[in-house]
Structures are given as structure tokens and as C-alpha cells.
Length: 123
Image (spheres, rainbow, N blue to C red):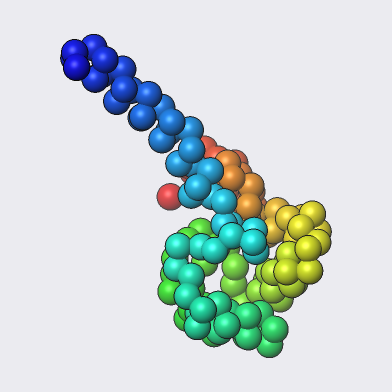
């Protein structure tokens, strides 16, 4: 194998990874049909209960400060977030997306409610 063909193969692999990786990273956010990286059956059950009982503190403890969602969702807007979760579970994805967008979530470009419109101004 020549250096040129080896380099071409590695470049192709890197290009495919660059195209597919962002979708894999964002696929679970806001999509109840895709399990996130921290998924366990026990955690899922506890999260479901937190949403059903509108228990922000339980959700916050289970979220453990991971992800942008923990910086956006707070005690005041948790009921809206729980509503979006319920709608998504019912298959009402567009309605859930509308609520998530209203909260500044799920826009995939960093824009949204007081987030610097994707310009990295909220660091």
C-alpha cells in the first residue's frame, strides 16, 4: 500500500466521521425515541416520575449538571419543560419542539433565549 492510498483512505474515514458524528451527538436531544449517553432503565424511570410529578429538584439531581439543558431549565420553567417531554412521549413532536424552542433548547445552532444567537457570547 502506498502512502498516497493510505492517506486517501484516512482522509475518507475522517470525512465520513466529520459528517456523521454531529448527527450522532445531537440525535437524542428532544427525541424520545433515541436513548441518550447516560441512559439506564433506573434513571429513565426516575426521570419519568420527575416529569409526571413536576419534581424539578429530582430532575435536577438526576441531570447532575450535564448538558446545556441544565443551564436553561430552572424551577420556574420546569413545568413547561415537563410539558414538552409529555408531548414528545405522546408523539406530538412538533408541539414539543415549539416549547423547547420557546425555552431556548433544541435549536442545534446555539441560538435561542439569551444564548448569544450562536456567537459564543454566553461563556
